[in-house]
Image (cartoon, rainbow, N blue to C red; front, side):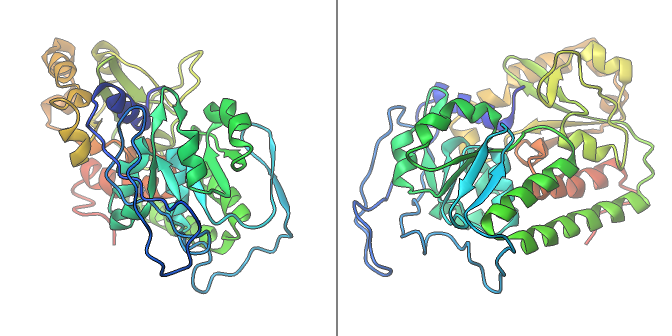
Length: 373
């Protein structure tokens, strides 16, 4: 499996200077309103995004309380099993959360909680206008050393909870002295993504807001389903330096589009993630009506990618020169569309709502000249 987060992380490892980050954490706890002395910390990779880190006290750097928000009807300490089968206990609703996974960023956006920190490869996702936009400037960025985050920087963020995926399970022991790790699955149906959000909302005392987000997402889906002809087939693919991939039925995005179109890509035998390798010849066997190609539109990613190397222009040209590619009806009809890689990963209801609003006018322009209001 190769995701947007993986590609940006690889970009940073291979393109030093693509990301720069200024850390601004105080050496000690400050009272609200007290000026904070800003220090520049350089990571071993000298990579990250230029951001102002969130450095206030635990009761001022996130808006976890939220105006008018009611607490969940659960008694704390609360114990919930995560995707790794580990029981995670929190003494009270966490307020400062570090995200190691895009699903975490998606969920916190829906719950209107600003993360205390995210791994630097997730900053472009947090910065999207449909996510935190300008507010992302207050999120601290955690650098990477190989496959591991900088644990010292995580500790400096003073989290109450760290959210990742089962792939982060080996980090649990190291994170234990800092904060509990809670893992969420990174594949599955869009309904499973709804349940992931409800699980986190339960831990955070935000169930009412999660229910509201689910209702909003499902009402839009039902509105699109009511009008969609469902007579076009689609493929969501990525063109990377190592080759081409498609998102299978195990991906939330393909599963979602199956509600309004046809996304006929079964999970290959032995596959463990939401994507699988694809060739132009295999594409021609299905010959989809519409092709969505994931790309990184984030300006900083593009500027730091050594000539857009992670847009894989050589591989793209190679694909477009393939005679099988040129025979595809989507290519011949001009129905190949570039889409932002981040939300099209389908990490949660916020991402999936974006997929609906972008896909339906391209799938059925006569029915949906613009996204539904």
